[in-house]
Image (tube, rainbow, N blue to C red; front, side, top):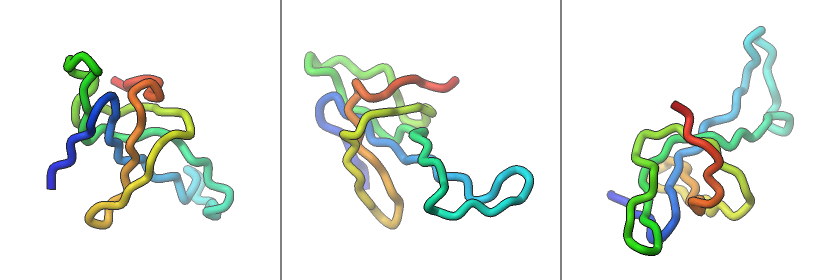
Length: 90
């Protein structure tokens, strides 16, 4: 199934939180830091029809509280407004 975000939105697969530290200590779910990093699955367009400067596969950091969580085919995704994407990691 192909998902195409409408408008200035980006569909992101969030990166999972670390469950074990590098030294092997288990981190309970209640104490895990929720990183807002992920991989772009699809990107919409600017209001004038121009492409957003992101493409599928880009690794990004995003912020804000306006992300809409969805689950499709057992995978978790978030729709994030383009203005809430803080950086692209290269």
